[in-house]
Image 1 (cartoon, helix red, strand yellow):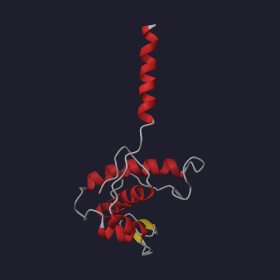
Image 2 (cartoon, rainbow, N blue to C red):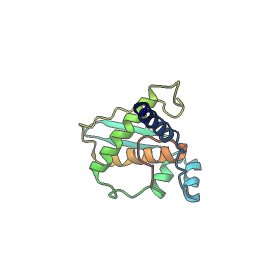
Image 3 (tube, rainbow, N blue to C red):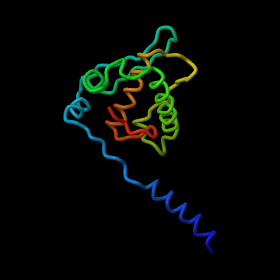
Length: 148
């Protein structure tokens, strides 16, 4: 009888941890204004050497990047690369499952190879787009709370 109770307790505790409430993000009025901005300016993420390019057309990201995000140089390139690898993986899983995840949010997979050095600027802007995206649309692309 004792042998059966232990596995049930483990399963019960796992169920409780999976159904825990999402942490509510602290979104300032300034950040909310950036989300609602209709600046319409595209942000290009590219590196001429690797011929890698992403164009972000999400209204408000340009304003958010220039007013809310941490400045370039705040994070190390290795930090950005590690976080981007995690978030790209989760993004791509969601992009390939439109019946489970909102296809309006995850329209296409991102081709990001950890073995390619995309440079600081590409990693910086991609990371900040993921933070912006998670905060604006209340999503979670990894185990980390999307903070500024």
